[in-house]
Image (tube, rainbow, N blue to C red):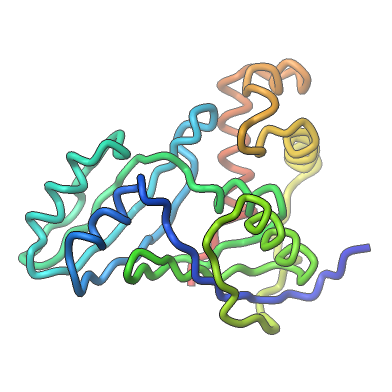
Length: 217
C-alpha cells in the first residue's frame, strides 16, 4: 500500500522550443515571470489556460511577441503597469500537467520561470513523485531533480480528497488512457463508459483536476 507520507520535490524543467515561453526568453533578458496557475481549458485538444505575471522594462514588446506567437490560441490582458503585465493565455499543454494528474502529484503554485526553465515544487508521496519523474524520463523531457525532502502538507486534507463518484471517474480516466499523451480514449467515449454526457464529464474532470493538481502557497 502506498505511503501517505508527504514529500516535496523541486525540479527544473525546460519548456519545449515551440512554446511561447522559450521564445521570449530567447529574445529578452532579465525577465521576471511567474505562472500563477495552469489548468486544462480544452481537455480533448490538450489546450491549457495559464494565469501569468511578467515584469520587464520592455513589457510592450514582450506582450506583442506572446500575442502573435503561433503556440498561443488566446490572450487576455488582466492587469497592465509600466513594467508589468498579468494575463490569461491559452496554449498547448505540456506533459507536466497530464503526468501530474495521472501520477497523483500536486503542483505548488506560483511557479517561477527563469531562462526558459520552470521551477516546479511537486508534492505527493515519494512513490508518486518517483513515478512522475520516471514518466518524464520516458518522454525524454529535459529536467533536473534539484532536491527532495519531507513536506508539511497533509495529503489527507479534505480539500484534496475526492468523493466516491469523483474517484471512480478519475480511476476510469487513468485506466482508459485519457490522460496519456497521445490520448487513448476521447472525452465522448469516456462519457459513454461512465454514462455521463460529454459536457457533464468535462465539468467534473475540471473539478477533480483542481483538487488533485492545484496548490497555492
